[in-house]
Length: 171
Ligand SMILES: Cc1cc2nc3c(=O)[nH]c(=O)nc-3n(C[C@H](O)[C@H](O)[C@H](O)COP(=O)(O)O)c2cc1C
Image 1 (tube, protein in one colour):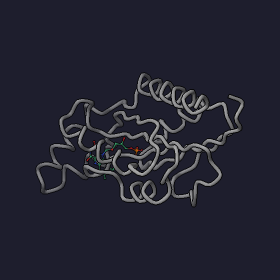
Image 2 (spheres, rainbow, N blue to C red):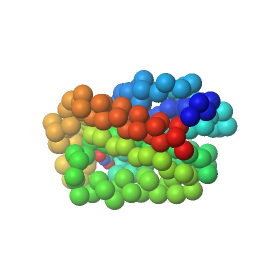
Image 3 (tube, rainbow, N blue to C red):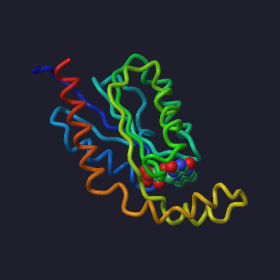
């Protein structure tokens, strides 16, 4: 209690979904705070705690996010937040999220949030033109992703951030 804290919210976002979640998290933080794209962060020395967000790309964690987490967050308290087009409960989603979590094995992972994000029309169009039927199938599911993250997912992100802040301020 009464500790001086500086919190960073950093994210990768190609089509705005992860940014939307990043902003919701950022808004709930009452301590000194910054919000910045991942590409602008050299090191984390100025911060007591870092929220790191990224989208799922091609059934995995974007390389830049993986490298950032593996090289810069060793021993640090962090939380991850992820958006993905796959609907919650999709069988292939859990192993994918587990892989993302594993990139933070050397960090002190305090929390993990994920939610659905709309598959952008341009991305769906691109996938539909690919030869691999797996990608075509993925492109066809855009309709189940439209509108995400929705108001309740954004609210869940706020609740997540509040819980994390309570945890770290009381530890
Ligand atoms: C190149 C590319 C590949 C993607 N591959 C997947 C995928 O394998 N699984 C998935 O659930 N979503 C996939 N998506 C969808 C994004 O994860 C989802 O739309 C996410 O919310 C995008 O976040 P952003 O708007 O912050 O970039 C992919 C998107 C792009 C652009």
